[in-house]
Length: 267
Image (cartoon, rainbow, N blue to C red; front, side, top):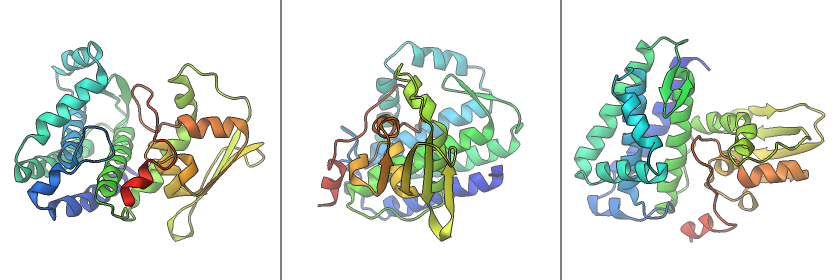
């Protein structure tokens, strides 16, 4: 996917969420989401914080190394949580302004960056296109937290395909993050996406497989749904183990919801 196309996908996912939350009265921003201790404002505050970190990386902020050292020297989850809460404390209109301005600044910085030059994103050296893909994954996942909190059906955006592809590519990383040996058997992933498109990964003759729709796979690899609650057919022990620990985003390993847990938000 070309960089401009990836930015358009990111904007699509962000704008869909923006339209949803900007229509809410300020009091509803305090509504809890499935992420423990986070309300809707915290979810948006986290996206603002993440955009700020990404922008500093792209601009090669000379103070970034010191910032990353503080991250490494603290509980990462606490560091991220603090950043989200600080921004969530802003008045709603101010928070929306910061989010929108940050998204625009990030898009400009991506287009101005050397497409072949790697940047330091929370300790990982990534290309600008990978940074954008990571922002799509994070935006899509946290948007789903908000839609679940509001008992809404998530709107269809092109981001789901990017999330699914990232989930495919991070299979080995999901095991490595937990110091678990990668299963020997290859896995074939075959997903139905919008407009008749198919997303495929792995050898066609692989002995194990994951098949179904792209949204279900994306929801599992972002740990927003348990594999038991979505439309996926999983064949093989190694494939089943992967779906239990799949993690399409970086950082410390985390666990997804128990069967049925996220469905409770729609009842």
